[in-house]
Image 1 (cartoon, rainbow, N blue to C red):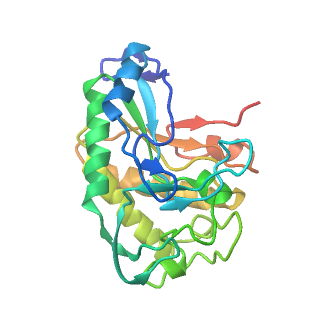
Image 2 (cartoon, rainbow, N blue to C red):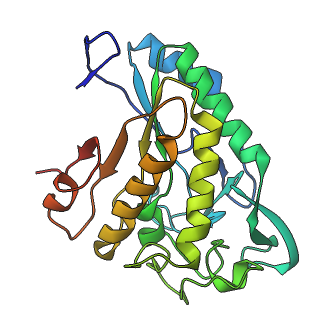
Length: 258
């Protein structure tokens, strides 16, 4: 439950799927989503809320959508430019984490704006710890793994599932500085739109409490200097009690299912 600027109660109800911001596809082929049809689906069902997810790996592995041999997926666009020199583990050029791909942010704005024009609020996921935990592989091209960028940033990932060094810190470092710059770019992109609700991540790892709190704090401080301030959400941390969320500075939380 929220309250609008006039003091009226606002209940957000909706549905979502995971590829409504970035386009997905198998076998290295990314298929564009008919986003207009998705918006029409929401409005036809009387929904006024949905989620726009960000998948942080350009390739994520073993999504369990089939009974056997779960497929790998590719996603695009991504927030960082692929400049090289050299190739990342997914076969594309390495990322430069100091250079943004404007196409990603243009798409983020266009889809958030399209939802707003239809009277639909958008929960904007800045990060996606859930996918980092469950769907990593040695060829995923994750930008914050050393083999995949030209900036000397390395989350320590080697192989297998897991690999969440980029969200498991307990103090600011070079990784959080780059993440902060990305968050600021997202705020600059969407601040004037009234239908935005920020969410730091989803189902992140047990050691991500400091990281979640950092991004809530930084996001609030940065947006406080802007014309508009939007609600900031905190979603489940697996392996942590919900008290970690309730004691935070978030405006709303998504507790674990009971």
